[in-house]
Image (cartoon, rainbow, N blue to C red):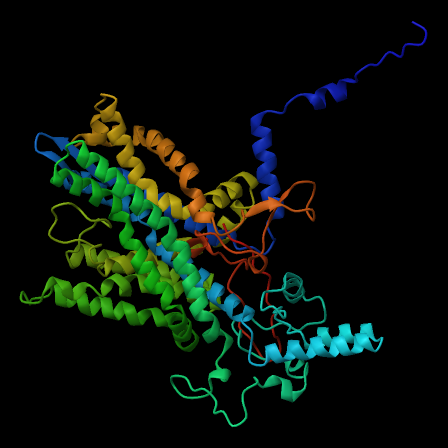
Length: 571
């Protein structure tokens, strides 16, 4: 009709208005994560950590069993009835890779903290720059003031407030801004530009006339301590806080749950069994905390002896095992307690060596051969148990405390991982796989703390509904039980996923999300925040990953490598 405009919708517009399937949205999200990941990020370290977490969860769900019978509750293991399953523990117990990744991450994290720590005289330099800038501004020379302040500002990115400057870090990471950066292993080095940035008088901390310099242990001036020494207390306190806060939540809720079961009439023996089952994975935390505290010593040892620094704790494990299992019946069993630290210190030191470039993928065949031969000798000739997990009722265990088989197996697993390093790096370029690794690393602490509780909740929930599943509470005596146990894994995973949704905020409460919107990326694509510009989540204590595709090159007289910007890891 005249005067009426008839509007039509093009097929293309109609098609674009239709909701896209869920699968395509997940793929777009994964592609956005992949695109936002820096090209120099070490994805293999993240993948090894995620693989270790998955192995721990599946291994515990398979071999940790609470049997319900007429006598009450008791903890059992299928390895009691099916010792042939011990071979599965060789591929599921991957904590050696976890400690390797932890040594790598903590070494680089401590070096970053040292770079962010103000060096001797930096406060004076920045103050001089501010006063010079103000004077120049009052005289009309604002540009000169800005130049003076910029010259006095440390290249490390520490501003007047003592906080890290993201722009300065970005300049140092990319090589822009005219700053010559330090190599990653030389965090305490002082550049000529730093020494010439301010007058010599401003490089002295102000103190009253005649006041003696403060001394610190080992002699020397306290002002002369390296940035790493000054940064260490705050760095360690931050990592302890991020690890222990989620544990506090687990302890409180577990105490409430046990109190409810006690009020319902459960016996003390059953309550003890349930509590022990739920907290059994927590032995890992104090060990990891001690190794984290020993990171400066580990770095010093690796700087001096390279990857051979791991031979020291390995020899200690050998000596203690000889005392435990040798022909001396009067030796107390507690003599092996130091192995709780020494055995896991071996892969931890190798991780530090990998971060410093003192261990490379070329050592993979030697690590694999040494690990496999050591395991074969210990199991076949020295009568070590074949299982890498504890077996209920067994006289000897490779885990309580760890035996020599633990570092031997870690060497073999690490050799395989480094042999597959390049192939894994190419495989992790697939967006969907990489997004899964990132997602798991973000909640690694929550998964580790709650996976046994999820299994226990599944078992108690089925009983509350009047269901009795032999795979959950029956005697693990045959292959039928194993098949049924694997069949209930999805149910346990659903309960664990619910736990993650409920409690992950305690893991990431002190930090923003790893992937968040940023106007600098393509229309809503997520980016990976830099560590220098954002605090880390609780899981960073575990998942603080590096961004270099491999160990950094060693410094030479001809080359002086530059540092790369660190990214907020998925740790």
